[in-house]
Image 1: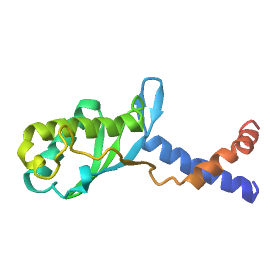
Image 2 (image 1 turned 180 degrees about the horizontal axis):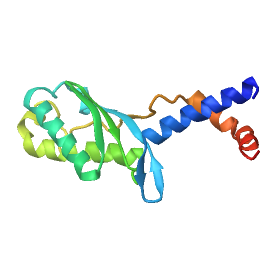
Image 3 (image 1 turned 90 degrees about the vertical axis):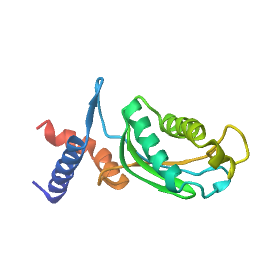
Image 4 (image 1 turned 180 degrees about the vertical axis):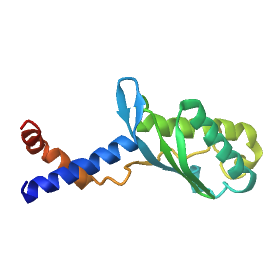
Length: 161
């Protein structure tokens, strides 16, 4: 076995380990989908403190449970929210952001109408329109996956021997 073949075998073993150990089963699929989601209150007001922050944390876990998401980490800052969430394949990243923002806005405005009105004057809103979302991998970089894909023909050649 030459040096290139050895490197390919090592790469294949590493990817097999990462993909197998961190995946979940769905209907006719295996998946590992994690997203880092960040959003801000309207006008980037610093109102997410004290009982509002505590209740928002509870609401986010409630939403996750209802939609079969897994919150891996979250941090509620006074003027923004970070959530690292794992999701089944049936939800797009836009749907995930929409569920967290939409449901939490409705529940928080119901539970804290006066506190929120002090900071946000527009009725029926808590969050700014936009959000940031990024796919997150478990120790697998884009370069490793690119190398794996680019070497598929080579791997097939050696496996068929």
